[in-house]
Length: 102
Image 1: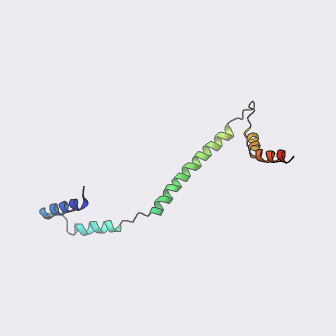
Image 2: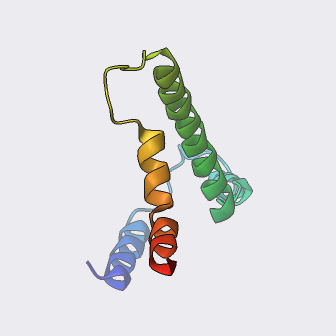
Image 3: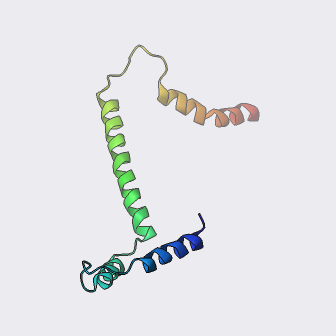
């Protein structure tokens, strides 16, 4: 809906209905003062709150996974030791250079 048209209709409806005696004195000024006194939402404050909440969740997941890795008994029958696989992968380029230089 067109905003200007909506505003025109609302103003016309307000003019058609005169103020009632039941409305307290200076009600409009009190409401406008309350609206002006509300703090302005800062984007940086919103971001910092969201990031702190996300950090708390990440710490909780980290603690759960750390406890799981410590409490899970190692499988001694497995030949896939991740430290050995990682080391051989990282040193593969060094081994290739050593073999090519001979």
